[in-house]
Image (tube, rainbow, N blue to C red; front, side):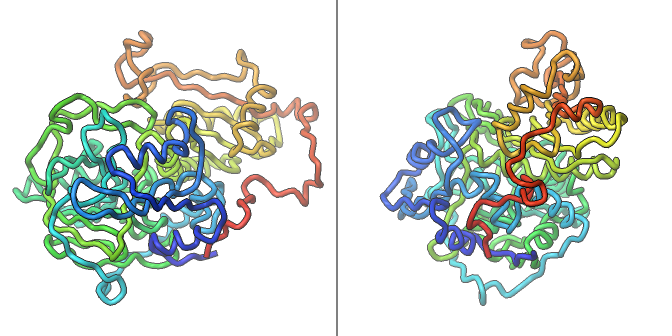
Length: 488
């Protein structure tokens, strides 16, 4: 089924009609600690308990440092099933759809945005926006879902990507860019030319666009525009219009657009401490001593604009990161001819470090080795993935109970756990340090492991699972959608 790209408000209108999917908080809530404290009950691991997957929550009256109260949205992607259903898909189907979108991109188009998406200009005063402060250790208010659109001045390739940005003044933001990624390369190219890089920062976008912006480079290469992937995923071209204060494009339907320039100047992320904001693995983040600065030159917004945000260590951010990684892993496995059914980047690993792979039931003894070889190849190719759990197609990879059942009854540690020592890893995992594990050759390296919970071919008759309905009538986990979540 093809779904035309919808703006954020159309998405929320669809949820409004479904019981329990959208909570509206109408009393006044402060942006500083208030939003995060109220949302914490639903944040979900890796946030500390008691939390759990929950509804999307629209705080309708959030008070900023100055100015009038306005709306903040949290938790839209707070469950995998809802996140996928926003595009009319199941969690298992979404990575396959992403692969199709990468293979058949739909380029963005320029439109007369004023005719369809009325926007109002505001002074570049970040204190007037309801940007949340999550914890009392944070460096300040953070944009946690700010999607930055910029064009590389040397290659002409456009990039859309989400970055953490801390408010440092009325018109200043610091931005943390992963080294070597597309936005940093465009920024460095602009510095070589002696010019600032024009950027448009978007808050409040259609699901197809935001999900596409979170895809890893292993899935969306540098020469491919994420907006074209979003157009294919959403079923219609993304509509662009010119910014008003910088020479750049912006996405016409965005709730907020912060126009600005990425400067050569740097500032400390936290001038008065060492903490940044909570990281997606659940631990306190460390502030960078010097980060590039964005000078905001103008703000445009739709009437009654909604600022979308995430809780740094929450379930939602892990889901957003996970779907793109799943598609990238699927691509590699399918190219190898591996008998994969579905993959799931588990939120317990921040959507990156823990991967569950569902395999077709084995057809020969050779499949025992093929499964393990493919799992080890994943660990070797994907730096972020630390653990791979392999399960058969009768296991619901979206169910933690089913995963633990498979781990308990289909794994013997001495024969079914494969350890790959001293591999390239990810420094934000505190175990990936020589001070924790002296067997590692350097910080940011890690031991990786495969937990093979698939049934050996020779023992398949002993592991037949009870079925309460005939197999031809029983939907597979990949076919299940929560009732009522097929959105228009």
